[in-house]
Amino acid sequence: MSYATLAGRTAVITGAASGMGEATARLLAAHGARVALLARRTERLTELAAAIEAAGGQASRSPPTSPTRPPSTPRWSRCTPPTAGSTWWSTRPA
Image (cartoon, rainbow, N blue to C red):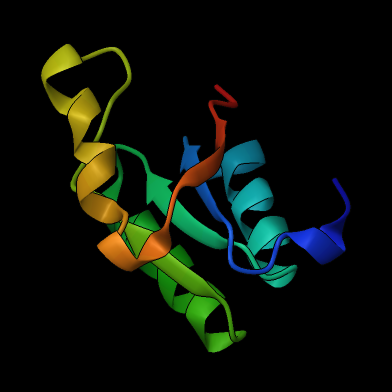
């Protein structure tokens, strides 16, 4: 898959608050993918979503989510709007 085919697709990024997750979210959004951001640090997700949207991308964020806490794992579906279509990429960099 090339960057040209990312437009209109949705990527779910866990660990998006910093490091590889943040870099992945920025890269995919810059190439047209909608990104659903998940992490424990809500304030960092808010800042990242605002930066992605300011650059012309589409981003949504979840409530605080930790992959090690099973009750929080279904929350990712709440940060992906119904208009996002199917999820084609999911990453867990941490």
